[in-house]
Image (cartoon, rainbow, N blue to C red):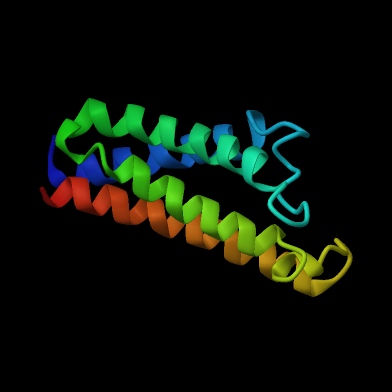
Amino acid sequence: MTPVQLFITLLILFQVKHFIADFVLQNVWMLQKSRPGWDFVPPLAIHCFVHALMTLAIVLCVDPAAWWLALLDFAVHFTMDRIKAGPRYLGRYSDVRGKAFWVSFGFDQMVHHLTHIYIAWYITLR
């Protein structure tokens, strides 16, 4: 596989991974990441663990030495989702009819996709 083919294949795999982890496997309990205090940690951590586990599966198939990228995915996803959902942060924009909600949602998705692009780029260049 050429580097370009590897990069494109990884981008496709990460798009599918993101859809499955963020939309198919995320349940109502995991959506409680906007809870006040520290009650948001368990549901958000489990949600991010699902993402990290799926990233680990992809990375182990291509470059097992880069396993630590799953930890990076966990950390970035946890931080971004809390910023997006936290009531003191972007979570205060919860009206789906307002532009601020959709800008926040789009920013969240962009950060996740940029993380995946970085992971694919890193693996491709090794």
